[in-house]
Length: 392
Ligand code: FAD
Ligand code: UDP
Image (cartoon, rainbow, N blue to C red; front, side, top):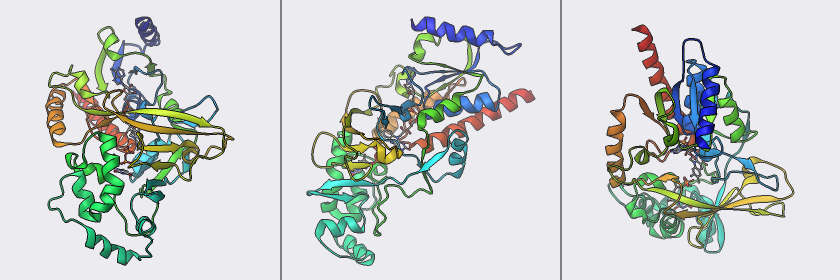
């Protein structure tokens, strides 16, 4: 079946052949941000013939969105909020979508209250029934902080700034649940994603561009991939067809350890199970996401209508249950994993005809905008190679 589909795509590609060229210039594994940005650039700018393969039945990778049975736009792989400080990334994506401005707010369920996270002035005042000013909060933090030098782990980052009590209430349980590891075992970069504030800014992100694709991510991906030089083959593991299709260069965006048949051992990726629920009510919770650091098996509940702005008489929410096994969603940032990744990276660097891009292929805890930036940089390198080859 899959081979039939593959040959159909292949046949249609070669019959629509550019005179003098056969087969595909590029085979791209993965139709997420990394693969789609490269497909779009290679086809449009360099007029390359591109085949994008994904084993899932849809494009968009983890950013894929769709309407559920009730008609609510949901993110099947968990809530995806676009935010970036990169004007060039924002401008690049703006070619394929209009935007709806959206600032994400998150509350954490702690001691029977729903409190702003990242921890800010309101969080502390409401938690302790105080009326501190920003200036007094700085002093409060200084009085409770456990100074750590150098700051190395995800525990260090938090206790160094806000002390152990706030760390225990907001970070320790959530992190243990999310990663199956104690924060002391994870790189500082993980909890540093959620920096403490002394003002009342209740937004989850402070980036200069914060917006959602007006008609959703999938529509944006459809536009990116809508080009006569781009062919898309879904429901296909590249390994089933890679030896049957002629191609010159591969862009690989799947897990890097799988590419090399786990020859140096398995790289840990953290997985999630998503429980999607549609409720016959207008609203479920006050904000886009509520975190549950200390109770329940799930880490957070997100309600899509807050995020997408959709008006609908019902509402859809997703619960995230962290799992050790399942689809790989998160690289696990810790030193020994980085060391193992470097072994795979060295093998990857030695391959002249394969480019590794994206969150899974470069084992980086990247947000969407970082993956777009990484893919645009990879494109520039490929473009230079083409220019050099043509000059020869
Ligand atoms: P992916 O989207 O994972 O795409 C890789 C593709 O490769 C997949 O579709 C996969 O099916 C395919 N593939 C793998 N192996 C094979 C194979 N053997 N054959 C064929 N195809 C294969 N980022 C933000 O900026 N904001 C957020 O709010 C946000 N929320 C997130 C929430 C969750 C729960 C998760 C897990 C991630 C979130 N992210 C968020 C991160 C975001 O999902 C990633 O940065 C981005 O989607 C990565 O794109 P990618 O192309 O590298 O990988
Ligand atoms: N975190 C936490 N408590 C929270 C929110 C985040 O301990 O209420 C920690 C946790 O380790 C989490 C990390 O900070 O994995 C990064 O949070 P973020 O919301 O960026 O995670 P993502 O959206 O990538 O899952």
